[in-house]
Length: 129
Picture 1 (cartoon, rainbow, N blue to C red):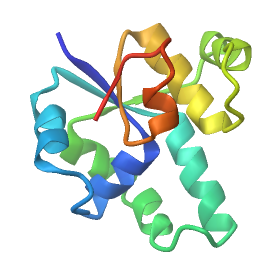
Picture 2: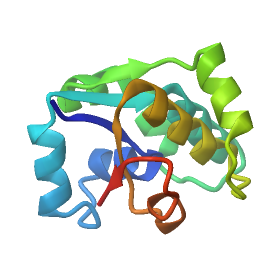
Picture 3: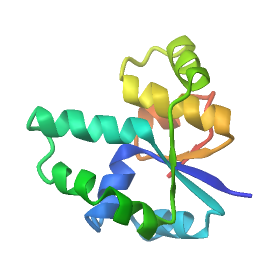
Picture 4: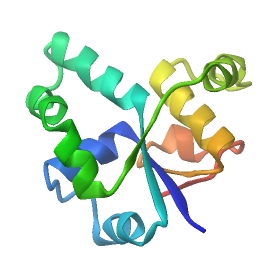
């Protein structure tokens, strides 16, 4: 069974029908038996909107329920276990959103769909692109 957790940029590219999300990635999303979008992604998008670093991000947040239905995705809340794992990862990577997503992927048995080379090269998470 394939369980996918979408990285924030993948979610944004899906929402914008961005060509950076190629046929292989779209097929992986379509073919997955379960798709998750982490709560950390909503937080990351909201933060970047507030800082003026994500034009169009407000529309993604406002259309969140429609986006989840279109993806047939389930929101993945952050638990104490996720946060403890994220904080305790033996990984010299300081981006807290990446750490949260990696921890969630580990604990939920999901493959993290990401174009981020730093995540893909971290040996302690299953990822794909």
